[in-house]
Each structure stands twice: as structure tokens, then as C-alpha cells.
Amino acid sequence: MGGFYTDPTTNKPTWNAYIPAGLATTDAKAFVCDDPQQLFIAQQDSVGSELGTSSINLNANLTFGAGSTITGVSGVEIDSSTGATTATHQVRLLHFYDVPSNTIGDSHSIFVIKINNHVMMGGTGTLGI
View (tube, rainbow, N blue to C red):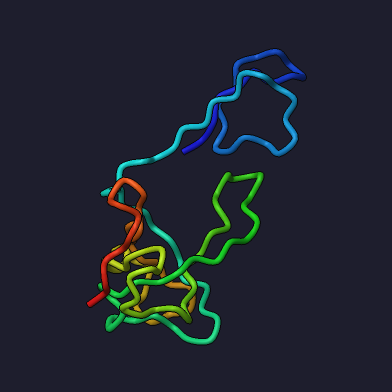
């Protein structure tokens, strides 16, 4: 969710969408969503195949890329080639994110997801349907 720290260059308290790598500060605090029911939005990477309406309630894994140091937006995407009922997959695809610019079946469409194998829910995910 972001981080709070004293900027070592300006000595000012700073809130940022991310904590910069290599930051030389001793008071950094990261804010993390640890609620196992927390919902997130994530786009699919559209590599190999597209996840469509038949993918709702399936599970998928994530792929990790570099985030933006300008916007603070994560580089994590849904690995579109992993949609399955597999219980050990990382996230559950709940539904499409309902905004005008998100079209079902389009490249890089956005899903609402939930962590499937959350440690606070026993660490073992549930089968997709």
C-alpha cells in the first residue's frame, strides 16, 4: 500500500507509493494489506492466451515485472496461460473490473482477484470452479 520514511536527502517525512530500493534510512515503515478477503485489481499479461468469461472463478499464478518509480504502480500481472482449477495457484479470478475501458477478452484486460493461498487462511488455496 506504500511506505513512510524520513528522506535522507531532505530530512523530511515522506509518504510514497513504494519504498525506493537502496534507500539509506532507518525508519522506513511499509503498509501492507494482510486481510485474506482483500480484493485487488490486476491485468492479465496476455502471453499465450486470453482469459475470458469462462475463466471467472478459476485460479491463476502471477508474473512479476518491474514496477513504475514514477506512478508507484506494481509490475505484477496475472499469468494468462495459467488459468485452471489448481488449488495451489496464487490468485482467484472473481470477475472483470467494471470500467468502460476494460473489455472482456481484450488483450491485457483487468480482473478483480483475491489471494487464493493466503497464509491467514491456512496457506492452502481452494480449487477453482
